[in-house]
Length: 316
Image (cartoon, rainbow, N blue to C red):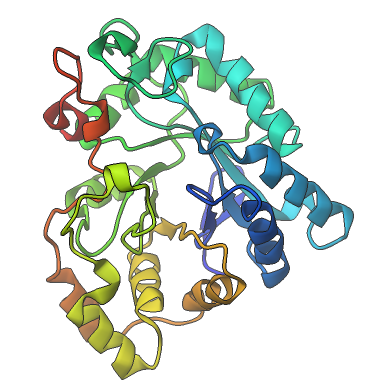
């Protein structure tokens, strides 16, 4: 398995299992099956609502000798309603209790967007807190404190554009270990990738297969279906692999980690096997031509009339 290395000697397996939108009752079995297949990187988040079930699966796998805690890389994320410095550690401790762990390998700020305490999803502008009122830097300082207390080994960000990341870097004592963003051939993020690579901040790509299974309220009709792209399918046929494996190999060859989601043992195995080979240079060149700036997760759900967030300031 390809991996990313950090200054403390730890390594992040570049192909992991995403758990967003994994159904209750299925996600635990999927995590357990993934660990048996050889996955060692599991990506979680409090807002996914399934960390307790994942925790049971992790605990069972460790208890059964499938894996040791030291072999695992477990990521979770701070939700938008817990950005106040006093709320960061309690949120992290709830995640640790649910996952049945004493520390995380990586804890991310899920979005550069802040909600009022107790709000899970905003309905109006009144549910949102401007970053001028609750700066990312103050949230980050509490994340840094969690590292110093041993509750997480690394901290990072998610859904940060270049401008937001630059602002944080100017004030951070601990540099973000990673930036997790939407990343696939229709949204290649070349400028952000180059910027982060120059700083030694690797990207992790979510929605690498086009996120076709996400909830209908954020899945507009008529959107492009990445797995049906003619170029991707032609490469898959020529190389004797699946379209999903083409997409995952493309991501890994660019030096980005990737976290596809599946609860199917067959697809879990298929996705893991994608890490065992490379695409040809001409394949990578053909895929480079597919860029269309298309976001499947565009952040518009945080844009409320009269509110502080716009797509322009979110992705600047």
